[in-house]
Length: 251
Image (cartoon, one colour):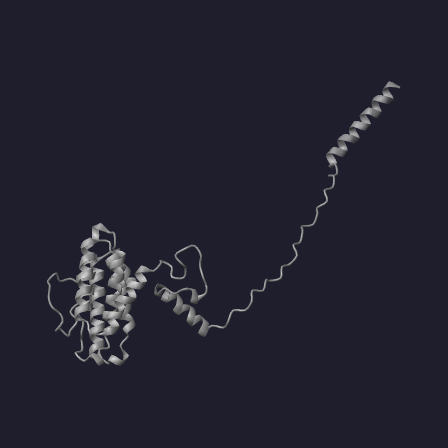
């Protein structure tokens, strides 16, 4: 993930990332397919979409989509993964046997994220060329793809792309917590999360207000008159004596 963020800013980091993923997928093919971590390949397709969308330069965005080779070539008969761009992953068919194609999830992630990318680029005049290239690659993939799960990725992405930004809220200001009130398939994420919560989490009890402690008022502070200081007492005593002496003198 860290390398994916730096790949948005630097071409060298993008090349290192793509080489690492290419070698990882290739080594998984040659090794035991039973233990290959498909999650890595799927997460990588999400990172590629982020680079195409938020890359600091047009070259970075283009490279994440077409790779480091500008040549147009047919990769359908090539069993080896030569790169890790979107186009490379779309044309990755390591096995001719459909029953043993365990790497279809890579193409699923590529198709899914390209459909999302196509929707996110809508209205961006400066990147209309990239959007058209994404559209053409998706149309071509529909013609050559034989795996039904991969074709379903486009349908799922289209539904999610048309949905609201926050699937937990309705398009209007009014929100609902009843999954039966939501009939549109664009809230599939909300419904799956709600069903899993109902199945795995204990039911929520009634809302019982917590007891409140009585508010204690601060004690009233009695203000006492300040006693005169020693100097004040001496001054008053001196004044009294002076008055007394004057009275005696007058007498």
